[in-house]
Length: 137
Image (tube, rainbow, N blue to C red; front, side, top):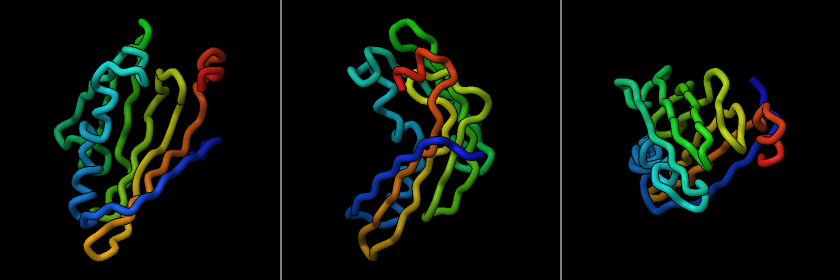
């Protein structure tokens, strides 16, 4: 699938690729900012539901549900690539019900730099289908 928009970021991190991969692979930690009310979440929050593999195998499923400003949000993701400690990719399945983003593919790649690492985090995405949500996106 192709997406209309893309964004990415890189940084050098003073830890090994193995340790960094383990940290980034923990979806609950990675998305912890969405699990508690905040200004970024406009007072709302999301909760996670994991399958038995907890997002740590290809085809593993992760569901998120929550609300923002009284609107119910939901998204289902599936892990599409997993190559520890180098790369992991997941993407939405079905039609996400989100405010500022529609379908997406997200992931990270890690380059080992001896005792340090250089992760590249990326997202390829579309805006939501609803006109009001496109405006917010």
